[in-house]
Image 1: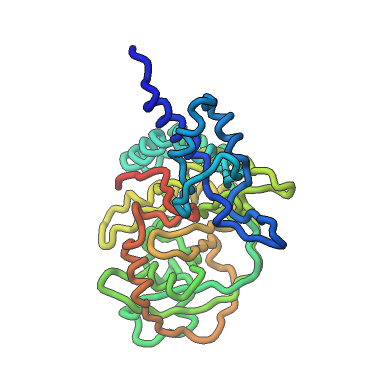
Image 2: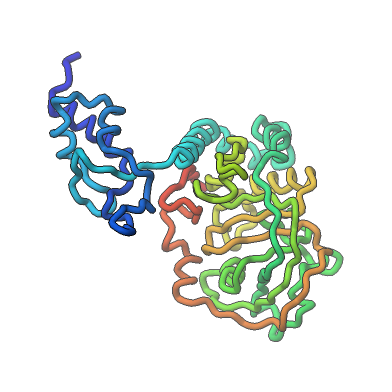
Length: 351
């Protein structure tokens, strides 16, 4: 094998150093003439060169290839540049490890459930979910308002009682993302627009919406994606929390969040979420907080339909804005999942 040319080595070394740089002094603020770093961890550029084992006689040529990824300005040897903090590197490494460890096995689990929907607990991934669900991220939610929607075509006028979870003794209940047929749950969202987006089809843009005051809830399985700075990512000492990699794979993947195939009799996109919900119920969780492919808000599922939440005002018809319609139709999503880590989708799982 021939040795790489000098230009090839410079290109490779520059790419390695460039991958570590997230900002430069131009993006920071200053106080009394001192630079206050707000984007990235200040690191001497020369340290990055040394860590990449850049030979001294190639330093100038490598530096000539480097630019700030934010403002595209060239960099100098004497400068500090912004790099990722250790907790950010830990977060990205955790996501990559989860993807490498569970991408294929989660796809296989979904395919298994398509054939044997009642036997998920016999599959290795199903067994692991049942064992580890108690160690998945959980949250205690403070008291706040949530919203619930019903189609306008279902009723000409709506009363607060009609906005409650349906009674399975009086109404047929279809299987949902986190419930089986004839199981009644509270399905709530964080905003009126989000509630409408959840229940409307492409031909609809309005729905009845009821606001509810929900008291503090403990033991909520938290399936919302989070970024490295999120309080769910760090413990009380500021150190990264360790969650099972399977939980990370589920949270940052798409198997829990494929958009519903409206009008279909069979919903394979619900098989894995329902299994996770069953595991959560079995271990005593009160509900699930999650995100949706149809809006940028948050969703809350409370398993006990008899939970009493105070109604705030009367139901009202809410019509989606143009921006909310674009979100609902996934026009802002590269692959469907609006996780809180922009431009990152770990599992582009096909339906």
